Length: 607
Image 1: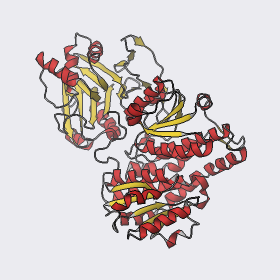
Image 2: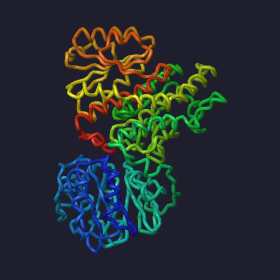
Image 3: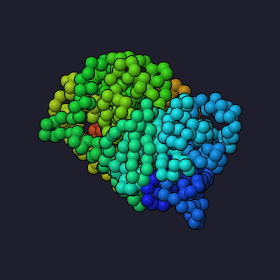
Image 4: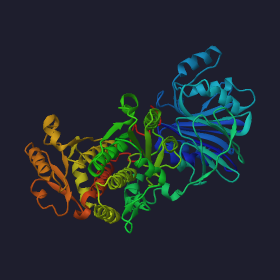
């Protein structure tokens, strides 16, 4: 996944491009570059973070121009070098291209172009595009892009400019996101809304196979047949403050601390104490009463773990079978059943495997519902219905508030469905609604009492491996807790269903392997106590996460992190916050790059 920005306006393009790229750096930070057009194409590239490119540009007084393109790279094809960084330039030095995606037939295209005399300088598939567009250029850049991309197999989002048309940017996409920002005497095109929020909240979404021509005053859209089309602007409610650190040292910590508001935003307008109901929009409610006999949840990464929690919710409250699949597996090996309601969970709404799985489900006649954080994203345009998590922008690569929001949406859906199927009565639903109304207080409590979490982080910082164990709904929490720890602190961590330790994982356990045990006062409490005893017999330290009124747990665990006892069935929400803070503080103590963990990007839009 890479970040793309294009600008055409009245400002200094250099400053705008670098500023926007900083807001896209979570999409990739192997290298970055910009191209500015002012009589000639000026191209500047650096490996590493965008700050390195910014420093290189700072004292260059020769950079002038109000139109340009920029790119921050997450390497998928070719090493991390300045030569492989974008933008890529055509052989005649007149055309510049930035690209996100993969060109699957680039070898054939490269051979074709080399036979025609074009020379290549990089190892990337992307460079093919600059030469291919030059090869198709006959005085109109938009036509050249359209004709060139008809020869391309794969998926892509590109922005192109040409010295021969100095007031034009052309963009097009297929299976990779592009959004257009509409300003006053300036226009933008980018991979993500967050890049544009400082300058405009008026956006137009580009659909697959469509293209756009941007001048400083006009935006012209074209369909897959290269015919002009019209589309209304969408107003974005986020503002730039939502996408900045606001005094926090890292975006991840800021986003953890926003979660008292996250749980409020997810439930706002969906819960009614007076009517004792949970409400969604008409389209979603119609999907819930549609004829289906099972639910299939498809997702990747953290969203997949949210989906596993959803399985517990739906099967407990609505008594309906649920199958949870990794989207990357479902699209090739899934159990395709037109009687399934397919729920896709995706933070960005642009995850390639999830989009492909959604399309697969649609093709066999399944009704589809997407849970996402981004209005107008590709997933919202594919699915039959959409539920927005309403979390605001999440910049840190490690998902925090969006995970919490996804889990809450799945809980709301399961309770709604349970009430519709009459497995949950009105009085019981009312009690759940009251508990959910109290969630911001419980989240705030964890955030305000984090001293002991920091102390436990000191214990974990030098560990080589950490186990997380739990039962029931706490099992997917263990998987997510382990993922958070490994992805930002680089400590090997694994989550296990506690009853499975004897079936293999015990072989990995040593006295130097800290174990984090999540316990709840439910039907499995005595079992988790037994599991802790089995672990202690082998020497490791045990850190329990348990409710405040559990006085027994201290007899078995070395350390106890507490969450409020009155959270009831919703105890998983404060537990999530504890796990996120624990991972954050460990990574901070180790001096890791928390917002930009190595080899990772925010959403995976390439295969």
